[in-house]
Image 1 (cartoon, rainbow, N blue to C red):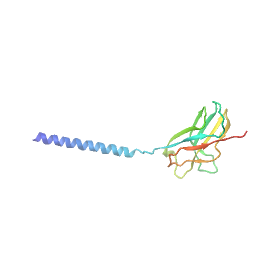
Image 2 (cartoon, one colour; image 1 turned 180 degrees about the vertical axis):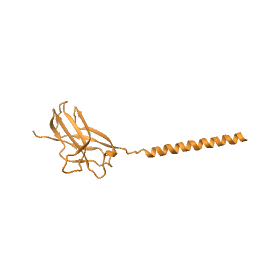
Image 3 (cartoon, rainbow, N blue to C red; image 1 turned 60 degrees about the vertical axis):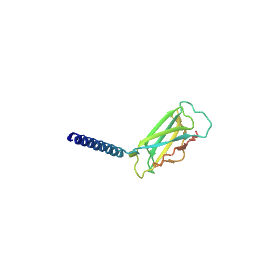
Image 4 (cartoon, helix red, strand yellow; image 1 turned 90 degrees about the vertical axis):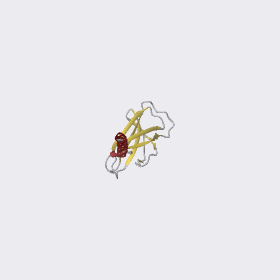
Length: 143
């Protein structure tokens, strides 16, 4: 009889430990911030019906544009060659890189051998609460 009681107690203890493990795992999962990264994605495009040389370089930047009389601070940047239109882009940036109350925007340009060919001429502000893809139009630069 004692042995049976001991087995039930062991089972009960095992069940309690398993439950504590499940609760702890749940708490750890709750501690991990599910939105630790901000995903910013979209495409850069231009209206001209031309093929760009393979050496053309697309640069897409995420910028802090909060200060009016100062240059924007670049938070992230990607560059790629062999540019086609539309050219997709995607950033995943830690949420702590963004300060509450600041304004952020996407900037894009295409250059060839260091000479600017296309650039965005309007602001493309980032809504940190949205996961909608952005469409960034770049305009041809007159030389």
